[in-house]
Length: 194
Image 1 (cartoon, one colour):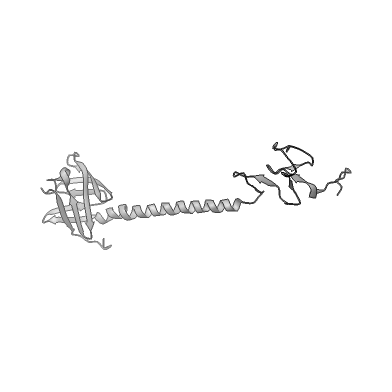
Image 2: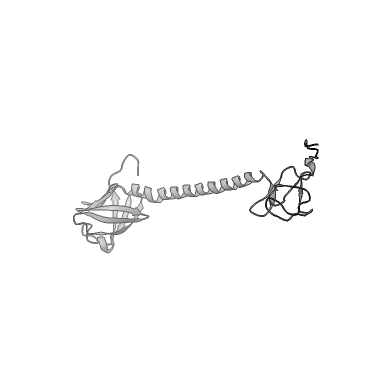
């Protein structure tokens, strides 16, 4: 095929640099684009491959435009695994921490007139009022009334409608003069069947 200037333009004899994939004039010793040394064994012929080759991160060569789908599938797998791990963490957190607080809410009785009231943010017994949080199987209490001077941890066990609390040294004597471990029974039940 003639290029209009009297020169032959035969694309079947065109060569490409094996390093960067740019077209190379026949007879050159170095690639004019990337400077890589060229030799007969290192040249890629158009007849052997209709697509230029390029260097990838691993040092292997592949035709331009190929291999992206494999990377996308690998990235999608990583994203799915990450999302699954996040979902598992959320489920575990809700099951053991959020639901634990909901299960504790209500009125508990250790004996006649010995009431422990657990609301969304407050816990009360005798005349003491505490702000609280639940961490696993421990109530973390901070006195809100009357003096704001008592705070500490109160381990507990919840089994059905029975709540067992360990008063420890911090709350010993404050819960209706009792110390040690106290077992309480739920005295109210709501429609949800806690």
